[in-house]
Image (tube, rainbow, N blue to C red; front, side, top):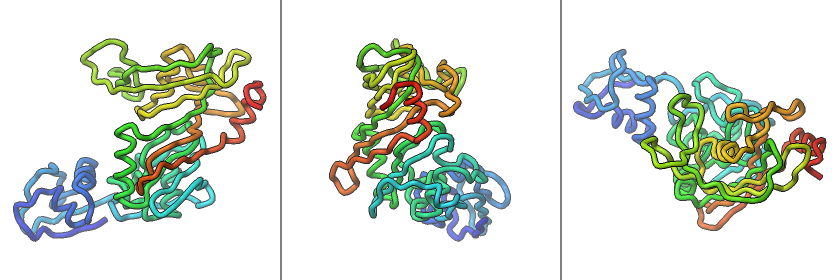
Length: 303
């Protein structure tokens, strides 16, 4: 917890917090919106104008603070340089904490070894991650080591300059390669789900395109490669389900039960190609986790 006294009357709360912590206005606004900032013991709006002598109290994880880390041996670094780190995320753990007391995430392990990452992103709980992978999704994920690198990589993701290749085990035998061009929107009935928007509608949707091709087919399953340059929430999961081939283990989108020897939905971020903050194109690959590879061998889908 931090406390300080306002010296300049008339300043907005979020601007005052940003100045005091040396963080961005966006990060300061998020602290206020999360209820981590109190003025004279009360929660107030981010745009509230302060008076000289007001007492500001800041609680919880703050920009510049390092979250408690997980053991370093749980972190697999695929690539690192002065600008960024590429990690191999195992299945079954979240990318970053959603609660201040959450510890068993990839970011906790990341910041334990690379504390500077906590200062790179707007929210220190993101630990400099430039994108996210779902809890059950394994594979390569990028984190920045500085604010300029984070902003450069985030911009690359937003303008579609990053190509991601996924490997998925899906229900049914996929007949041929194809492209799925379906905008995605949050399901109004369940904000945890995304839905494809096939017709013009008032529902706010964002463009999303996935190319796919079957690698192997056998026993009512297909091992599929999916390629994206748009990074919508659950994109590959929703798109493959939309063509009748949901991921194995993805009950949220109608998939068959998970494999006993490879739990969770079966999706792996195998390869990423992106513009490095220094300008050149860069590529990083992550091998399939051994349990998932063994499950594919058992299903005669992998050699």
